[in-house]
Length: 172
Image (cartoon, rainbow, N blue to C red; front, side):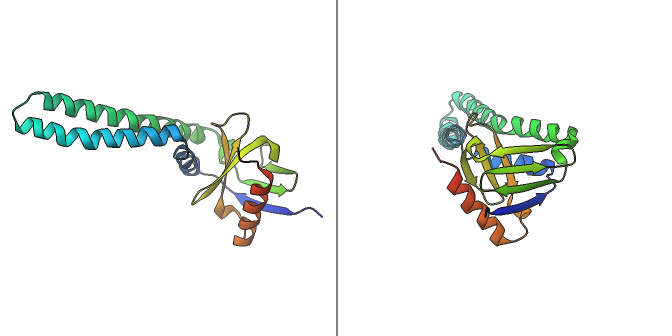
């Protein structure tokens, strides 16, 4: 007898943004960009203030570069999030109430617009965040689908999904 788990939710633009943000901060490149930006800013600001106190005009230049670097880092994360929100705001299918029927061999997603069958082999990785499960596609590691944890009717169903997903997704 195959296990079957049901999850149901109505995604909001905020869900897409939060899930995308959670996904971003599991990516090494984004983590590295964030760390380097913060480190550069933390080191550059005191140095430029010391230079300014000694009457050096280069202090303003260093501050401008540090601020610019920080803004570029922030824009790298913020711009895609704003695009995601705009796309979801304009696409009713992305906001439709969705039912996930999760079985040993596949996942069926159904809403009033479409039905999609997914196999576990399509996924490369399960990311367990505070609010979402993110299923990362094997053929495009920058693409994922998300399932809010509140979509399950009980904590036991949520745990069963997590165990099932970990058993079926080969983390590479």
